Length: 100
Image (cartoon, rainbow, N blue to C red; front, side, top):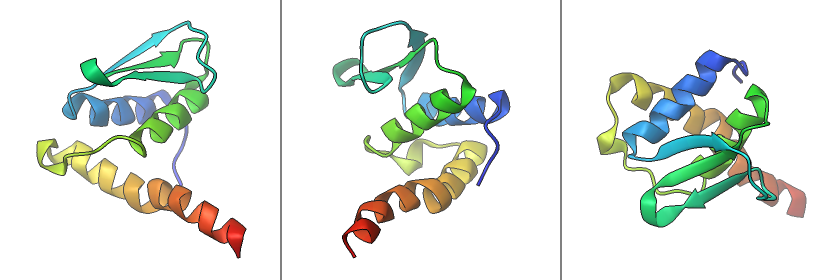
């Protein structure tokens, strides 16, 4: 998979930036660890989360939003493609495996 480092967090944040989303870290009472304000393309992540939890929360959001790959520049597109193959597709397969 990949390492849960600040560098990886910045790369995930860059994906959202290129999709015209703003990622903010604030305290809140949201149960899932994040909140999406869809009308304004703002994602708010619990500021008390460590790096791993922040990345996992952003990946959860990434699986829920519509991504326009034409908006990406080269490096974020490469990273998104790797994430899509390794992480996002695995999440989609989990419910199917549980049913069999």
